[in-house]
Image 1: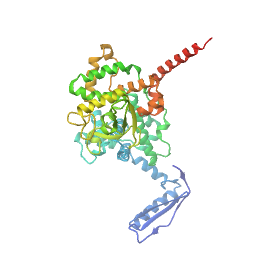
Image 2 (image 1 turned 180 degrees about the horizontal axis):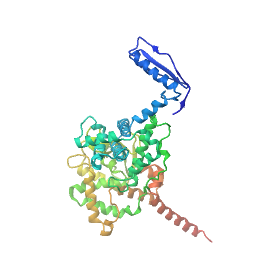
Image 3 (image 1 turned 120 degrees about the horizontal axis):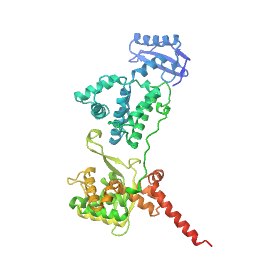
Image 4 (image 1 turned 90 degrees about the vertical axis):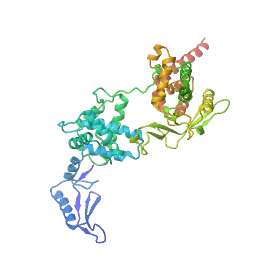
Length: 457
């Protein structure tokens, strides 16, 4: 935010034809500034304020045109709580419902630590519920919160620190320490802490854009803070082999009508390496299922559960484009004959929902994670040995996707093609499946060595 002494305040301009005819004009450096008023005394007063600052020898900001004393007052008047709500207001309309929840979660973790005094502090759980459910949920801003939550919000509004305090690295570190802990004081998961740090960085970046700091530097970059170590790599212990997957799918099928309906759903997660959100929204028109040979799926959308209070239409689920892709982008996936047969049998036995979805609840609704999670847990318990059941092996339905990609890689499929089919970037593929790729590398080395030995003298 450049400051300069090169300031000139011009005479009052009068434009009779305008609703606000009296205009104050001044120049700071090479930039001209102006503000119009309805009444002449208002314009005279503003011009006098600028002239007084000029006589006191104050520097002016070239971007905003304000004297340094007004800049200090402006920064001191805007609190973190007020700015964090402005951040939510700015982000809300363009953000998916799941991202809205994540913003609220991050800010509700950080804000309780950004206070000037602990006097009269509400219970931690009440304060978090008030922030998460009301202060940072724009859908509820027109509604009146319960008195207990309203009281907590009045307290945080009164005690919130000024945005200018973030220019002190100690304040930034305090915020980072807060997002690194859970409500019970235990360390937060690495992925959670890093997600909340990204939200804090975005919020402080907006403050830089709004000229709330004396420099154009995001304060979060001034603090040396080590983010918790995040393990993105797939652990080979959670990856089921093809024989185990077949046994687990049989365990799903043996659970009566509900299991028979979900067998092909879990098959999509493994044989096509689909995400559960993509499989839940799979429709008949996306499927090419020939009677013989390989087929294909053309994925276009997914559906995630966010909660009724976070979506625009009040429904619990939100339809979204494919992960990390433009809204209307698609991803074709070749599928092996076994999955083709599985899907053909599923359509023959169960048909589709009214909108063409292959998988649905008994009432035709969207699949629930709790529902298919129960079926999967029961299949593991009945099919796996006691030792396997207690291990990480295929513990979550999502692990089927990892097993599918791992099988492709171990079969010698080019990693770039694996990444395309799975909807990953190649960089993510190498990062997430590093241990699987390392195993494949060892096998390749042994084959090369064996071939070289054949040619040895």
